[in-house]
Length: 119
Image (cartoon, rainbow, N blue to C red; front, top):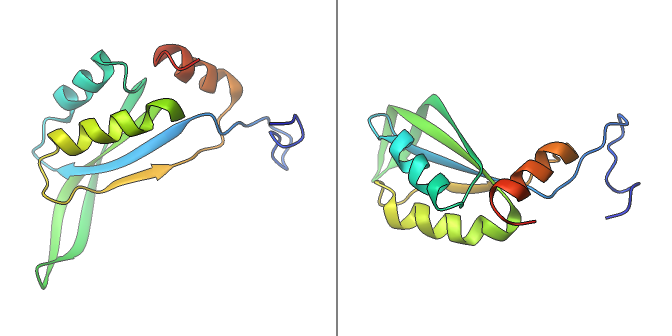
């Protein structure tokens, strides 16, 4: 990527070297344990856990339930292995696993690469 392509219009340098996976979980899921296993396998460098409320259709009914969101931060080279880990261990029959490609500051992207052995 050229220097010009890596600069946003506000002049701050950004890079697309990282991948975030947005994943929803039941409110009672043990996300810390789930995340620690992914971290121990170097599948990701960080996981943020947020509480949320989801309103959705399931089997013809509108559901309104508390959930948790985990935001897994990793290097692009680890995305598929991390997806496989999440799919194999997730409590939902149909988990939401959405890839987000953020514009990252270079120092954070370097840390992601170093932490996940993807440099």
